[in-house]
Image: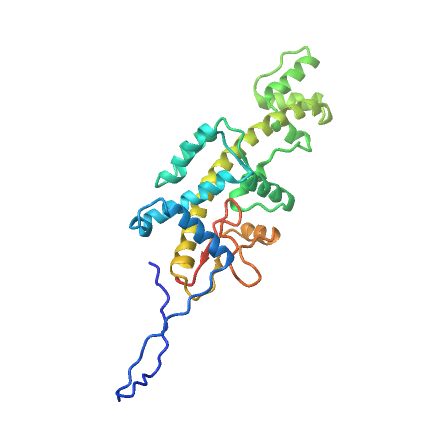
Length: 298
């Protein structure tokens, strides 16, 4: 349970001429000034909350829903995201209306879509560029490449491809057991001889790999939306509604993988300006599990 920071009250002595007894009066707490980002978030929530009754605007669950509405709206309005018009209502129902994201439905929505999401695609490029793969991007390490020796090449291609080459060269009966095919093939062909079938196989496995990337991309979208909307709600609650006199800081989980931290550092990702004010909220990248510590827990 969150334990809110204790409020400190100043004291001053009364100076009424007819009174001899001292008494103390509470001083109003000085509220921190709103930052530029505070104003943006405050305005967004006010705009979306205006659609609800005065009572509902203070409802915890309504505010959480509004947070999801804001993130959904920002997602659709970004130039780096594409989705056909007939799928947007389904996506809204899956991400905003539902209390929990139905990942099976989420994958179904994008099944036939040419899914464009720039912040993921850019993150993927950076992973390959830096050769640093955060936990959510470990699957990228399985990107297929051409083998560099005969043994690896034999395992890389399909047995049917090997048998086809053997049939063209030999008049004898070609075995069907793959171990026998490997041995016979190695007696008659070199790695260089396999160049054409290796290229063909690379195209096949690359297509398979890209399908798996799309699957991961959709899953990461759901995770990103969940964390982003929750972090936005926390920001609104702690920075706009309660506004504590404590500087927020990035909360890095002890269980966070070292590759995630290395990637954040290498890509120079941050959500603070030079004065320690928030300019955005986590996730710092799709698949990031960071959150903000507002000084009201631990």
